[in-house]
Image (cartoon, rainbow, N blue to C red; front, side):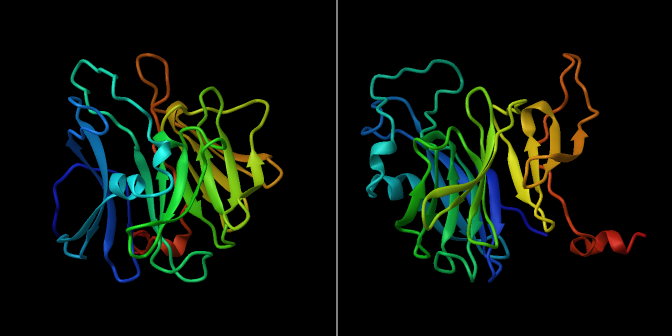
Length: 255
């Protein structure tokens, strides 16, 4: 119906007015970051329902103007050779427009930022940070999701073992954690979904696994990607999502 080309990446969400909030990158040399190496600047791009750019907000600038600017690493002396010379300071990987009934004003935006180990909420004006949590608690997180109870569910990747965290943004406390001794791990990617029955669907992306656990941590369902490569490893699964039958009307018509 339409398309909009650009360096869009990772995620998008549709607001109640049908505007589309998407993540995008642009590479720029920022002397305050590095004199010669290009920096990947994360943008939140707001598109109309027809794909026209309505607004573009530099998440780099929002962070730099905030009290959290200290989270940026000091990389003035870093030198990277090869084709991937762009310095990825933030690496936003999730965007979610917040509606009514949440602990934040409607129209606020929930973002996940892997490389600063943070999840944060932008004000509806998109020019300031209302809330930020994660540094010293998270390591390379993905897929922070606002739950109906106002808590936030997060896939915390870690460096050797991953975990799932449900935290209360009003108290900044962890209220539930899934980190079994047997362990699961995805160095990159990973997603998590709270199901209507209270269970949690976890996608262990890098290993091509997905499984559902109860509140007490018992695995009640598992899927392993049957697509195995020549190296003997299962194909990765970026994100698995469970839908109720009435959420897929286009499938109902094919039955």
